Length: 482
Image (cartoon, rainbow, N blue to C red):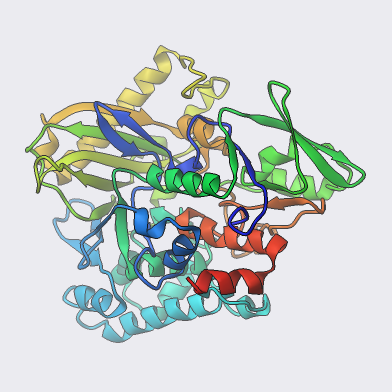
């Protein structure tokens, strides 16, 4: 956006791939998404659609729509039934009503509440507004809000059944995180083909078209301040990159270690350093035998109990307490799946004994036999759970690839492999919210730790950060005019 409006932009990327959580990788000639398995809000007229149109990539993306009558399905324990989350507000209600015939009023109230939340966030609607608009809803906690909408406990947990999308914690997660994320998928739900890295690649092409420069494999470990302004960024190999403005989208805790400046007061540093991080994940990616597993054009979120909030606080001996299934169709065998990604929560403490190891493409190291054994043991436990729901998987897996919190940590530079950055807390909204400005006048923040995570969240935050340099009214006018 900055380059498009005439600024000279240089992107410094630590990894071989740009895009952070948009990175993909290949196993047995099969592409897997590292984090972003599907995206909400890419349907015409949505906020993300407008932003992607403005930056010039919307019409270049190859998208596959998930099942509009149930892009997500919520399942519990050994029950065969699964509850659909559908596209479109009316359709969302229509698809759930057969399971909850007495809850139409509650479902209407749920949709109304979700829409009201979106209206209270000006940038989510691509308009200018005041912070005061959000004050009436930022104190809404997710479980209490759902309870106020319906007394039906099963419906409450079905509505929050895909809470892995924001690592929801009962009594802590703000309802607006659920509302904004859910509303985007209710608007539209797509997979990006052949993988989410296409978004980053297209953005890179647009950046270069407007004169931008990208340096990959360039890890920054110092930001030099002089007379109250940053003057250059220095890489681990000693290169210096001078600039007028500096924007960081890495974890604020990591950023602080780069800067030795009295402008960042100890109380600010202590606050950022001590903020709790959202939980991490374990992912098992499977390449499937051709023509053996029927493709599911939806995602499944499974929970071991009817309480969808319990799994994030699992005991290692009871792992996994929940998982998500993401299928990808085989183009050569329509109707059948080519691959399956299984994602579930994992606490960093489970891999703490290997915390001093490091391994990523371009800087590869072995974590040892013990780590490989740990991964395989977890894979067996997870597969045994999934076989109960998808028995046809047994004997039809060609190969597998595994990532743990250490993988997330090494590839995204997030403390403890945090999935969604700093954990938002409705009980401490100011302490767990970070703005785009810092006390260093030419240092700005963006990315998942400001405002909201996810493709939609970081895109909206990118608008906020860009507006600091270009002006919000000007930028919103440009975005909505295309």
